[in-house]
Length: 290
Image 1 (cartoon, rainbow, N blue to C red):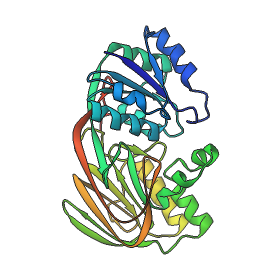
Image 2 (image 1 turned 30 degrees about the vertical axis):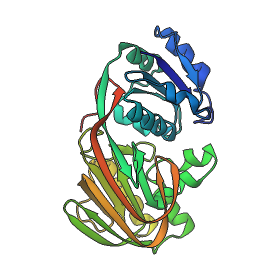
Image 3 (image 1 turned 120 degrees about the vertical axis):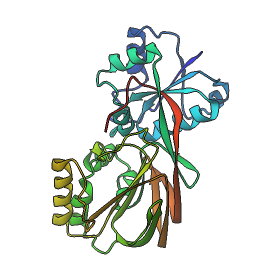
């Protein structure tokens, strides 16, 4: 079994880079580590079954590491170093970096779901509409400012978005058609830098489709606050629709940008998403309960 460390130097504020994690890994008794970079793709061919791939970066970097682990049947370990770190929240990882490294040294693993949208893997969330804005902002400051789910209400007020876009969402239980401000398809319980989806986990075998209708920024903000305070989404569906499904199809009247785990996948007219339950083996002690 070989231990690999791949770090994204541009993740987060840069404080949790390669040297940071090597020091903590050594403190946990993991000194024999092969250090590589995502810009060099040749090392990926050397990864063998049951190797451990440790990824220090944000959710986009972790998704790339997950794709490699699925391809090579290796184990993923997450060293949260980005702005949002939603996947580490889904895993319920300790906040203390040394405790994370000790957990890695223990070798304890869990199996989690993996989402796919238009043949691209995602671990956290795929967005169409206003939710794609943070992924299309270049600076870390923008990501920090827009990282929470509440940015939808704030941005709607600032940039005057009211009309939305026309789309049909088809899921296991039927279909919904109308105007939408944002459509999010989540594989786990967290997205948007810590916004939790009630009654969802990373191993429940289902996608969560959260779609928001165009409303005033005051209405959107109130919906967000009620969701946070009550711990569940509004049931009337007048502003927010939340359905669980193993797969879904989003069909658009006009092309829109699609993002997955913060990566821009280009403009699409149609998006097909599904989940692969328990497909990914990752270091973890327990998963976040519902």
